[in-house]
Length: 204
Ligand code: SF4
Image 1 (cartoon, rainbow, N blue to C red):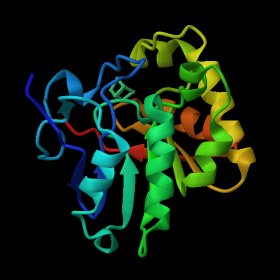
Image 2 (image 1 turned 60 degrees about the vertical axis):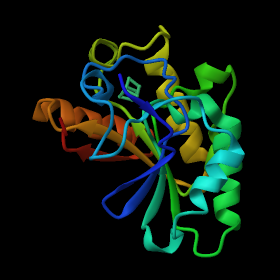
Image 3 (image 1 turned 30 degrees about the vertical axis):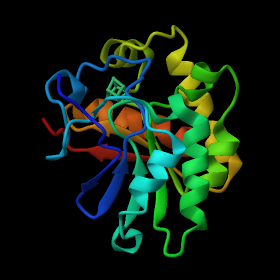
Image 4 (image 1 turned 180 degrees about the vertical axis):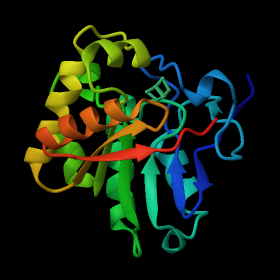
């Protein structure tokens, strides 16, 4: 496993941020299982978790206005570093020409922190994209393999709380490798929770 200090990396028109390698899941399709980076990036395994100062120094080297979105994503679950994430988002919002801010999350931040985090997250971000992965608890647990027994219920509550917070766009996502009937069931569940479904292409 190669390590580096890749704090930000470009994916298409967007800038992705890599704050942590911690994650409570072990998804069967996780890119971390078979690569050290993503979309041609340098290794995303971090030598250490970047401090806020290191993140700001990295962002100051980027021309923010050229990006469509800044996305908290990386090689781990961004809400594992909720405080730094929120401070980074607040810093970005204070900059001129700040693009839209999105998080790609597994939706388990409430379980990681033992409290509801939807409000504070939605206050700072424009889009919250939550990995649903599968429309039933049995399939979700088989694919996502979280360390929490109540993960499926918790991610639904988190989604509803984000919708209720009312500020950010709330999206649930599945990967297009699941059967069409599971995609439709996922759409129905996302819509029941007040979110939109996005079907992502599998990228190996
Ligand atoms: S939640 Fe994301 S980082 Fe964590 S195991 Fe799943 S795909 Fe990988």
